[in-house]
Picture 1: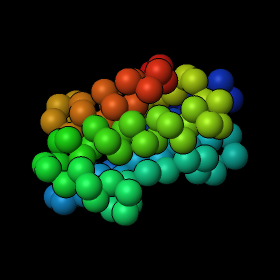
Picture 2 (picture 1 turned 90 degrees about the vertical axis):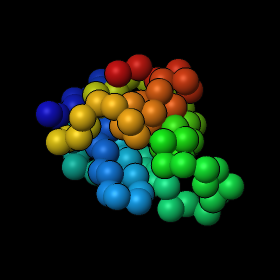
Picture 3 (picture 1 turned 135 degrees about the vertical axis):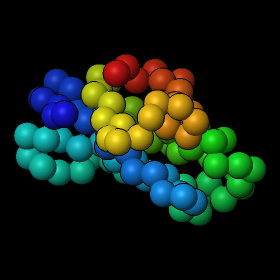
Length: 99
């Protein structure tokens, strides 16, 4: 799965404890924005991993909005679209980004 100049790619990595997400410009091979559950400002949301993934998605969405990124391609990789991955996507969509 690749993005293009109009739609950048959201890449997700999920470990047993954490979740990492980044927006990648595939044309240049650079990371534009990233967020993870290890960030200090998200430590107050340490209720469960699904709620934390939702907050990570909202944080990524805010950072992408500042860069005027609107349309994205969601690359969930090998993970099923449920649980933390679904919660992450809902957090990104709540900010107003489309994929």
